[in-house]
Image (cartoon, rainbow, N blue to C red; front, side, top):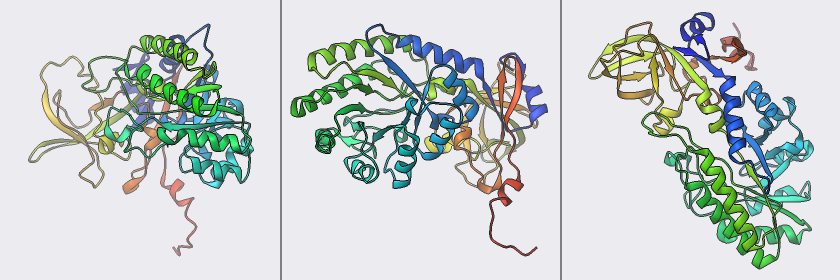
Length: 412
């Protein structure tokens, strides 16, 4: 298999496994396609990359160069955005259960703040009263590819319940804030095109009710992200052109009919930009004929946790055996001492042998950024393919990195 013209086997030989590989050309293509889908002469649009999807500074900088700001959820992500040259005015801080330290960092940096709750405003006002404020509104509904990534609705921990949203804006008005935005985020990994204009219309109707009660208008409406990519078992890609066209229609029509102003449209894409540009390369260490057949890999849930966390399924390619027709059911697992360290159960694959290279595709989002050192299996190197060359952008972690953090005086 090749990734943007380079042999996976050569990458594995040079950088070792497990290994994350990112195709930077693909990221740029995704960024441009999304911008085109929401291009409008009538409505201003702004794009903020959801840094949590993959927080590598090289990727953040690449997307900055593509005209994207940053959606940050922590002081650490704000620092990454600033150090890669993103302007404070192009950074959103949208945390939840925000601490005073969170707010101090955000205020000092001069970034835009979206509040998760009415009580969040109380904490923010202890240090700063902003000119513009936005609340994250839970519209009472949500959807995600998996239940665990559904971030709207009655079970979600995020946002102000829509019935109470007007109280949040009334409180902001009472303390002298006169400029407003609104945000929602209802889920992640969604491939249903109709979901996005439908949820945007629901949010706008909520804002219309707030306008009726308080008379305020909105400078921007942030519909979050949630744009999905196809994983194993999915049968189609998201028609992002349709999504963009329909969302713009909804925003224009509802803004006029509800008299909520002429808000700009803000978006916070993450997975859609980087997900299908990333690959996890891992090697088969052994084949076990137990009660079931297992292939043990040098990557485990410490490397890619999505399967253990959500039961998410990635496409898997066996290097050099892409064209084999005879397939056998097999479980793929890692070396971690937990029985949840299983990527697939009964996945039909070519007959595997020790030393085979497997490539998990669609691994650019919520992969390396969620990796850990459990069992002291250390984090992998990361490589970017830029202008036809493989460049190491993160070295492989070593035990020295661990010992450098230890302050307890051990006598050796």
